[in-house]
Length: 396
Image 1 (cartoon, rainbow, N blue to C red):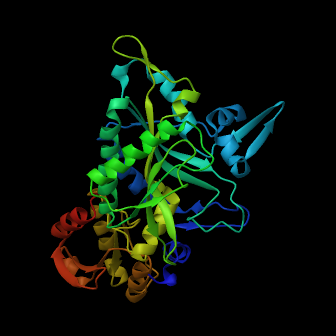
Image 2 (cartoon, rainbow, N blue to C red):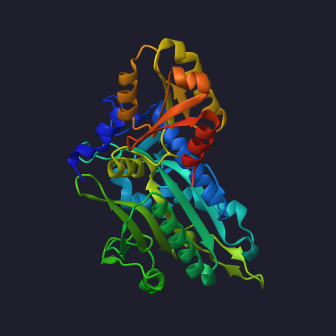
Image 3 (tube, rainbow, N blue to C red):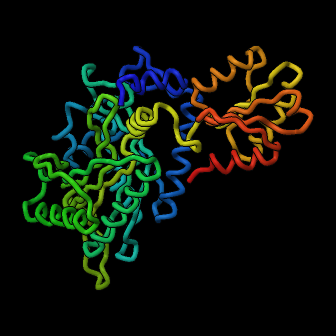
């Protein structure tokens, strides 16, 4: 990939997002960028609902004591945004897991409630130094497609297998091939070595069972458990972690999380931390760089633009755009002040996958001339063109 594919340049060209010195390390999502996000998250929600995930939304600010109990304060204090509040200290969340554990405490009563799969598009906050910030790739505030699975010990392998199966489908959907790493215990960690042995063995066995090539990274695991990480390269050849599957035998115990077993004795659920896209911002950045902004049609903020040859065709152009929109495509009529050539150049700059042109013949025949991203053109009846375009831009 060329460095010319930097996501910040593409984001400017497509008017997806912007950055400003008044908001360091954060992105402003513009209308077209928010369309992209909405399409991506609609797809994400359908996929997760079909697999039994229950979406939640947890608070942004917690008492610092929560982060001390979870162990995040000891590990990440320098990266956290801490806020004094009278005689107490609050912290903006750098992770979603403690909040999900609090939710699980309310929802779990017995072994019959397992597995519990909680998912959240949760904004998190990291105090990144100015030298480390890198557009959407490394930001101070970003959203994680986070999920936490609370399961019985005998269901661990089944849940890991489901996570790996979902990950394969997710990256295949975007025609991306991640590099896989098994990250093992770090020096600074919680939990005894026997639990770490069991967790590392379970993840390694799952990778072997699925025949997934991977590298082993000693010392790169989370402080509460080992993990399988999915990495992709940016336009400069740098590797970035996106998805992850983390096996945790310890954190639930810090919160006293337990359910009643079949005989009434307490069972401590095992916790799987997992993300598929990882940071939503980072995923969008990588996808933009891999595609040079030519996103899959179902993600394109504008899926079709209808251009009029002359002013007398503008009304028909608006009718065509309305027909496409009514059928479910994100379509718009071109600006009347633009020449046809300028409209086509603008649509190409914005990476619009379908450009429709209407003139005298199209107006008379109730047809359209369709220009696709590859440059090919064809004349089609309006109804046929609408059906074809809507089918091509439908979400997978």
